[in-house]
Length: 177
Image (tube, rainbow, N blue to C red; front, top):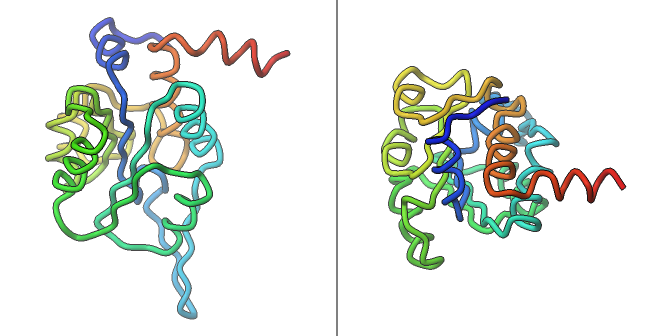
């Protein structure tokens, strides 16, 4: 995949990867019944996020307007650095993480797909939307992934960061030997 120099320059600055959950990490489907909720997460997205943390020293945060035990369980499984689930503004949650990490909005990759993500997309140094995001999110985004949410879109964003920040070839050598 070929990326513009502007996109690569934005990706080189990223120190914090933040994304929405439903519609980005999932395909926005929620299965409910018998008091339980189930969501489907893409395993490659998960591995990519772990690689960002362990191999590129990029911290990861998930921000969702919809509280969910399934999201908590997956975040714990992946050792996600920050998790915020509340109907309040996502920007406020992210700004608290910025203060804690001493990261600026210019160093944030934000990935979102819907109305509740627009303010964070507008502020992020690198804004990414999955292919099936609403038109307004795609219009704000610096890049729209070829894949829809829940089907590897997060992994495509991770791979962009790993390539732009010079980790890709080392990881290929590490895992191919």
